[in-house]
Length: 512
Image (tube, rainbow, N blue to C red; front, side, top):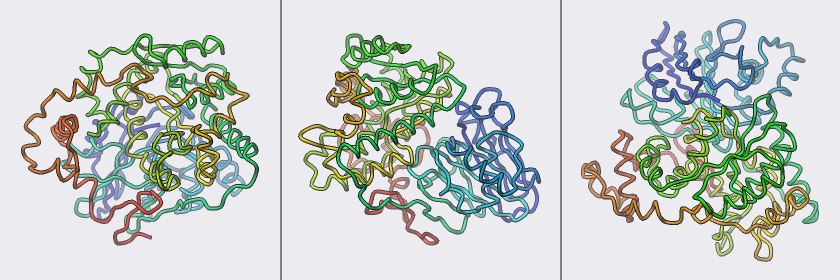
């Protein structure tokens, strides 16, 4: 897990100066270990950079990395969970590896498969591969958008980076690179498509298969010699992840946050004691949450109220993980979107279409929040519910095994019935503000705050964005004061739109 930056200058014959990439990396030092921060490489036609958080092959897998010829280079953020299987396949094809890293698998995989490489990857990733000899590159992002990637063009130059703030020192306005796509600078191509066909089997059989896939998703994400943390609310989703992680890893710590006496903490404390799992609790205070609000806007790069409220509550959990020396932490995000966990699924006229939209939108809501607040504390967050095989299966499930007889996420409860105690498996969904004891304290505080003067420079912007709440104005003002571009140009950029199935797709020239 890392922070990456790249400048591609296809018409420059000599090496591209690393000064701009170094400025970009300086904005995201938090994404790498202190000893691995700010590594940049000048190459003919490109400059690549990486702040590396060393997890796989920690000693040898430095980035940016080259192949044995020194002509193919990559900078990479993420984890490839099937890298061992890909390594075996590539070795049989004659490739020789120097490290045990998933980063090197990308180099050999690109040599062997070219643009087909992203579709073969099981993991969360954003990477840029540059071929010095051919003057070609390939940038790609994972299919759901667990890992961030942004890009912009200036003249003949193309820039890529992990966070929006990377572009601020260069006075560049970036756009999000879409999940499930690759680009070579000429075409932007979608490599992942919606899975089709309803899976066969009885409801019980479907639940068993879902449970098997979820357990395998967790097993892949705890396949490390490092200790593992789980952000644990005491709810069904995080309880499922925690129980399965403890089944497959010997050193798991649950981390919970909440106001003293909150319902989430009561469930979390009780269950960890009964299951014999190490448990760390971080108590929240309104004063601390209020103090950190401007910093949360800077970290998360959003002005959306719900995401900022969630980030305010969850950031202390990742801070605790960092203090414990944890680099790998699992989270339960994505389950509600996939498995009809929200109340609005009950009344929506087309719950399947709602699922498609909510999953497709995770990349700029929950996943953006999780990535930013975890990486701010140099912690890698892994998301089992958004595993490739879990999503493909859940996507095709009939809605009546997700929401049944007034019970949300029925299939998950059924799958976990023999794994979790009944008070966890049957615990009703409860919203984060109520569960943590936050309620409306922070929101009510923000509603009393007036925005600064930044919004005055953009008359009518709130109306154009459809924002009519005082808290929205306050957060938007903070967001703009940091130097971010006006959001209507970021979110409504010509050529970008939501497809009917909820995926974010490029519809401009060169798209397919």
